Length: 126
Image (cartoon, rainbow, N blue to C red):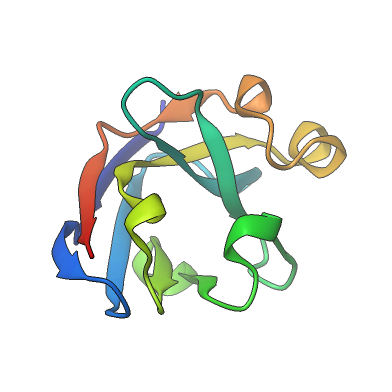
């Protein structure tokens, strides 16, 4: 069983930065990691993914050039560095883990992820 716990959310003004963290426990060595977000009244959106080795990443077009996903394998941590935040980035952000072969086919599709954290709220004011 894999447990994921997010932290680092908060309130920030537009143009600011936040760094989200995801602490993973359990056997997730064969799992790729992803970040998703969901705003009230909107569908869940894939934001960024990183593979098991931390070498390959994939970002949604909406965050390219602003968000960076990274991993500290030794510390069992995954991060999402968010820069140049916009009000439309306001959402609950979730960390997720899924089997690498499936995630590789559809990296931003939440249906291929098996494990989810409880989420951390990010609010960006204009």
